[in-house]
Length: 288
Length: 80
Image (cartoon, rainbow over all chains, first blue to last red; front, top):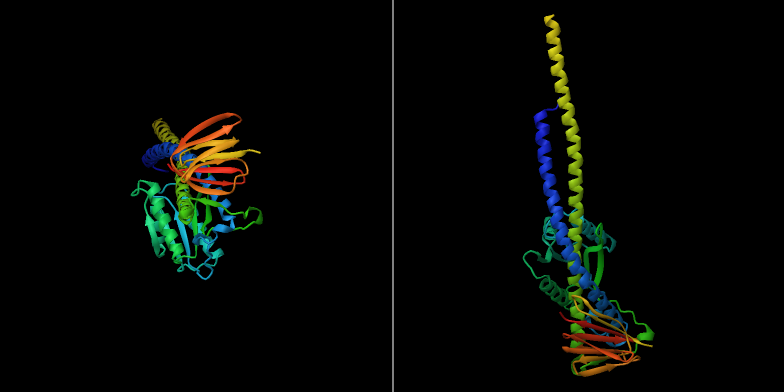
């Protein structure tokens, strides 16, 4: 017979856990609202910027820019992974790592011929544990201003690309699809895709003409920063959404467990009561 | 034929709609844009973007940034 006292203790402990997961869900929910608003505010800027880059890259005039250069001989791939600082957000980080290994296999990349740029503590820990040499790591909690962090990273990867330390650059992060759904995805950031279509090849008038190269350069470099920045903001929103779901599930599971244990407790108690009554009846009948 | 003007900053969409004429405070002077304008890229200085819909003229103050014009689409990306 299960011990009454131990069941009671278990129920109390699970109730505590449920309280905590419930609170964490609320906290994640509040943070999620904030992060989601930030993401929605930035999205149009990032999308329109992407469209502009696409327009520009259709024009033959600009294809001399180093960002369009295909380093076909350079097999080193740079991969940026945007993970999180904190855990307890379901499979949010694991999905990234899984995708990373899948991509390694699919692209036939050698684990030693990649450069990793990892954002977030969880990712840094994971790749350290798996003995990858990591080129760049940063925690979000130590870099309060995400914009500066994305700038640092953008400058670094642009330099690595131009100096041919990496032939291609990818970014792996979680795309925010809905509150219930985040999907790990890989996206190529460098080199830019150049699709020269004849209808748009009229070129651009760039002003001021005296330093048009710098203007284009700045636009491209800022684009990379904007892209990274947006991915980070998107990942933030996804992280909190994922945590909200994970904590909601945990709370629900705790509730189920409590119900099950309460039934077990009641059964055990009833058994004890029945036994006691039997004892008394036996005692009474023995006296007769 | 009209122009599609989009002004965005990292924080918000400032303007999105079609206009008949637009004046942009480009770095090397105010740039008037009518439909059929040549493809154009320029830095934009802090100042007012004027646009005309029909006969009404409206103004939006913006910070610096850059502008890209192609195929009657004007994209102004404003710095924060």
